[in-house]
Length: 221
Image (tube, one colour):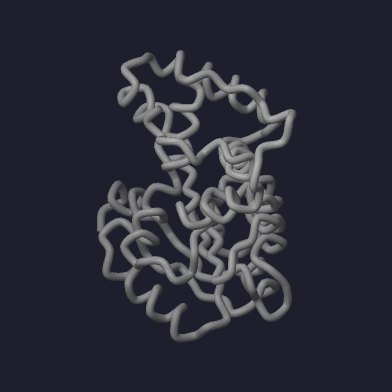
C-alpha cells in the first residue's frame, strides 16, 4: 500500500463487549479497501484508553458496555481528540438517549440490529463530517411527542427541506445540489435552522426536530 493510499484508509476502533459481533465487524473492516480494523476493546475504560493510544479516525461502539455507556466514553474520547469521529450503536434506543447523543458530539447513531452495509457506509462517510441518524431512531423520537408544543419553532418551507436532507445524512454540497441553490445559501439555511432550534450542531438540530415532530413530513418538502 502506498503512502497516499494509506492516508485514504480510515482506521477504525471497535468497542463492544459482545466478542462475536466485534470480531465479525473487524473481519468485515479488513475486507474493505478504504477501512481497516485498528483494534478492539470490550469495555468503556479499555475503549477510551485504546483510542488515546491509537488515535483512530473512527470509533464504533455499543451504547451498553459493562462498565458504563458509549456516550460517556465518547465524551472522553472526543475530549482527548475532537477530530475523532464516533458512531454509537444501540439495541433499544430511547428519545432520552437520542437527545443526549445529539449534544455529545458524535457523528452517527445507529440501531445495533441494522445492516452491515449501512454501518460500513456510515463509517466511510464519517470523516467527511456527514451526520447519520437512522430513520428508526428518528421515528422513536417523533412518537415521543404526540403533539407539538405551542412554542414549536416556525420553519420556512425551504428550511424544512434542508432539515429533511440533514436528517438523511447529506452534507451541504449534496443538499445545495439537490435544491438547486449555492453552498453558501445552503449554509445560511443551516445556520438559521440551528438558531431556531437552539442547537449547536446539525446532529442536535435533527434530534430536536425529531422530538418536536418536525420530521414527519416529506423530507423533500
